[in-house]
Length: 189
Image (cartoon, rainbow, N blue to C red; front, top):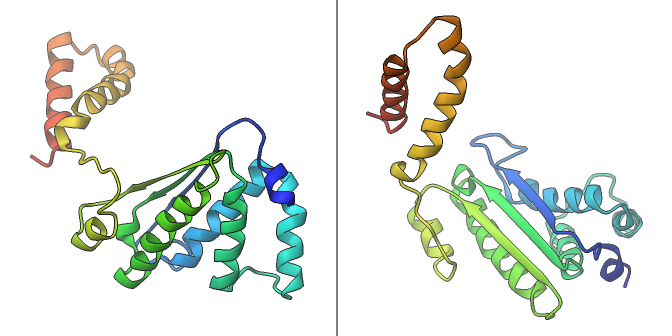
């Protein structure tokens, strides 16, 4: 099959999607699942004839059929040797849409990995919502606390302040105070 040879380039294939609340182009199953297809094609042009033929045979200019999206993504993912599907913010989708999404994608990833040569992984980044926790109950989870980001926030603040320190002749103590304030406020305090 064309897909088996098309995606196997030796490098990891990374796809991602950022969901956005009440944005019809970013808060539903179709939008989220079309993204990996588009990104697989961007990363491997050999997929284009396969996907084009499949869409053209159904007379679709825009990929709208949920069943066709599922079928194409399933076929494409089975050919990915080392890949990632990253979805940031499924909690931004309505409950019915995220239920479809978080039921389908883990199943898709599991099925793609049935062939021992494939390693397809998923990363879902979300607020801790009860329905999402239940849908991903079999997945490995990691809760990120404010303290987990503290060093990153301090480093970012320090890098952003470096130009201001020179421009306004800010002392090291003043700089440390500003970084402490920024870090504290980033925690919501």
